[in-house]
Image (cartoon, rainbow, N blue to C red; front, side):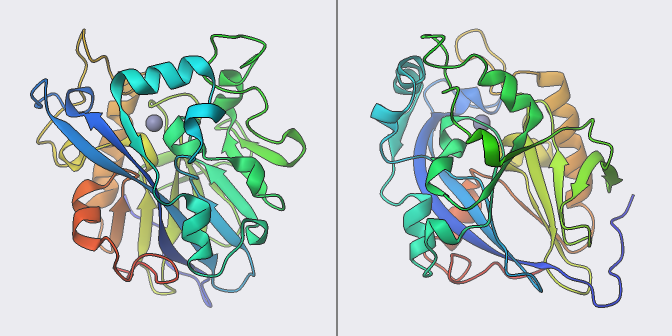
Length: 295
Ligand SMILES: [Zn+2]
């Protein structure tokens, strides 16, 4: 298993990290080794990808919105308050502005999945093509408010400028350990990866970060904790806390694929809620207008 070698004049992406809120999470929802009372403060990380030869500004994940308490569907707000504590000192728009980018400057906004700490507010990106997994569409149908108990608004994504990526799309290719990925620009610089199991429509991103063979994999919520990738812990699944994944068996398979990818040379793997990475790097040069160093 390997990743495609760079071509001549290989294009790539420069990746910057964006801070987009914090969620305190009971770890017994995440790893099967956690005591019932352990909480962890998860950063919600989003990413800005700038293509080496195109003027595009591609944002991956939109984090948590500041007005989540009033903007999200009531049943979702109740669920969030039951389990989590949320704080959004800086949302994805604030983080983009720190480097001089306005939401209207964003040309592509990809939402890995529709969970509240990833969906942000896609509509503020008024010029962007919104990209989401086809599976997420069913979660918005009929959606709130037609279904008053639905977690997600039916109009979360602006219909006319949203592109739903499906594993059944004919242009899907296999890359590394993954069976279904979309070579988004058609030049091998950025792949939108079908990474199933967490909730329907979950997408990850695989991007080249140099012209000479370095990559980053943005896992989103395919894995919430590094111990799931190292094998030190398994996916939590208990009567009280439930399971973080809708389809645990498929999520476990996706985690195994990411583990195989992470073993390849020059591949950096980033999680949306990458606590150890954040603790080491917060406020540092990886955050926009700075950028992640290529491996
Ligand atoms: Zn999630």
